[in-house]
Image (tube, rainbow, N blue to C red; front, side, top):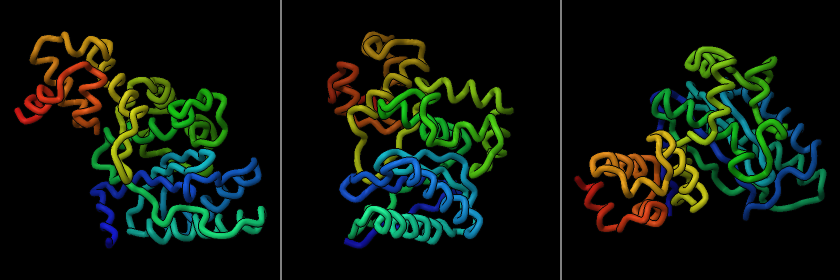
Length: 250
């Protein structure tokens, strides 16, 4: 089956995820993390890419990038190719390190951009690894210290400065961003987003079913807009899928 073309973002901004082949580990130790960051620094200059957020996890990488010259494919090909050559040589590996194709979401507006940055920055927390303060391999410190790889002006301009950035990122339980990727949301991601939507409405997730009909229906529509399936919503909110379908159609 031929690959579908990447949707072009009107903002020129994308969330890109590169995952180890068969979810294999791609960072063995600190030297590997630092080597990848060195390559990221080199490649962004080479291809005119701005990095707005980054997070390196044990078996995958999250990047939020601005690509105004349509160089994203070449940028990622060089970045991942050079890193794979380094890692295979260092650890005596062979074969493909990364999955054949990166997953990418097009960012459609400023609100989604900010949510994407918050999601990437807090990825270690959402993955249950550790708190944001304990995790060294993301771009968070570049927004409140001297930036290195990140170009912070877009995000800081939207939020109003470093202090507002810190407050926004710290409100991690309100993050409603979902990465579409190659398939449906996992149960863990669906639960995280559902809790955030409920919090934005000032209620607990278990209380959505008992809300006044108009407010309940709006909550259901918000959950669908943020990527949850009817099945996810039904299980998390104890609402029948037939009722959810009727709400969504209406």
